[in-house]
Image (cartoon, rainbow, N blue to C red; front, side):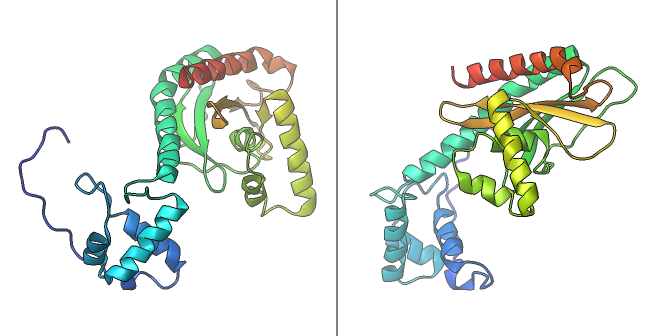
Length: 258
């Protein structure tokens, strides 16, 4: 919404922290409720404010604030802390990629004749962030924005191969049996070596390949093209299109880090 308003700020309704759903992890839910008190009019928290808004006594409110401060969610003055800054930096990095990607993906799609996609790592696989469909041809393959891709999808592999935290990969592979997990880890090693990931989804006639997009410290996104196995065979016949994909990802990486 554009413009400003001179309307007085309405008092926030009291939401009792004791009414939080008992089925979840209460400490996390309660911390989330405290952090949710930040808005455009509330830049610093206090025991009195938390007590009033969440229906707590001040001693309990102070205990929550102190714990969040020690954990890095709050600063020493109970404003947003360094961990919030870290998370916001990740979000801003994704926003930057999403602002730059459409033009590059459109050009990549036009050059390759394939649908071009950029994705980010979610909790259970790559999540599609932007799609540019091929503008020519009688068959157009696409994927919806927001789709969570399988672990063996090209973009999931490109993102997992360069994760600095082994626990992330372990969580993603939790649904695989021991042999599948070993094979998948071997595949990720090849992706790290080649900086190139092919999908292995067992879908006849479909093919996709992805490469990583790096930030200053670690992988930020995956860029991919997808099409039929005739247009994108996982062999040397796709070398020209793969080169175009690599060039587009390198250009995006350079702009993100520029």
